[in-house]
Image (cartoon, rainbow, N blue to C red; front, side, top):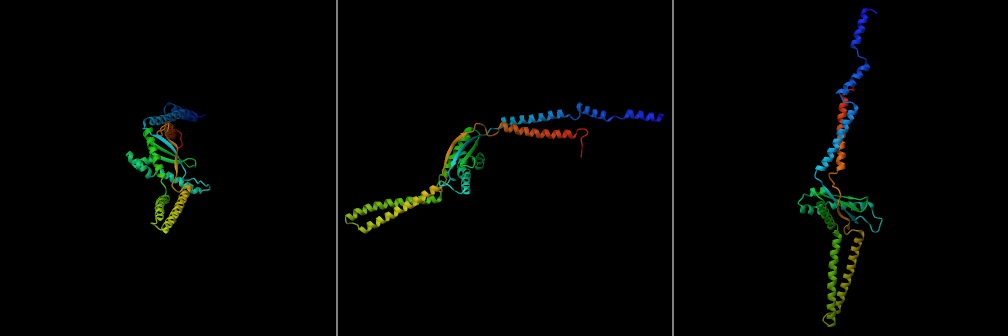
Length: 291
């Protein structure tokens, strides 16, 4: 080997670094203070997630609590006593009750009495149908158990008052029936007077017969009106009948904030933050592929 060749081999030995030794040097740099290794990244991510969970629990303890009350109402508006009713019609009837529960006719007077806006009270009251039944679950919220119960009791009372009102047809029939009964009573009194007058020779028999015919017609009209009202009652058209199935009661735990949900939300946020940080750190790791 010539002297020039020996010189070139010496220079290569002093300047070149084998690939394996270069990799070892990068790994040592990572361990000493460059980009953290995978175990340290995992520990960092776990710490962030735990901090998010703790923050969620702390928020649940600090935020003002909202309490709830619940009641159940059995509505017979959608029930057909004779069976075989139209399911779509029944669904519309029961849905109408949900709308009625949160209408201004029910919530308006309550909001005015409590000195609140209607929309504010509307947010604190909710209603839903349980399992496609005729049972309506009603919830109310308040700053305390007592406040929630008072609001819910007022809502139930207002709904029952509105729901018990007869329909327009039923009201008209009821008015006609009352007038007919009054007319019947007057005719009976008149017949008694005419009977005495005819006996005394002060009235004609024709007038008495006419009064009796009018009484018969009035009694027939009473029967017809009563039959019509009974039919409306049977088909549920006089207005929705409703009754309290489960009286209002306070829920055992606050409805907001809920520690479990708050902790889960905090953990989720921590997981997202940890994922972003880990991705950034791995992107900066030596040897990572960059677009």
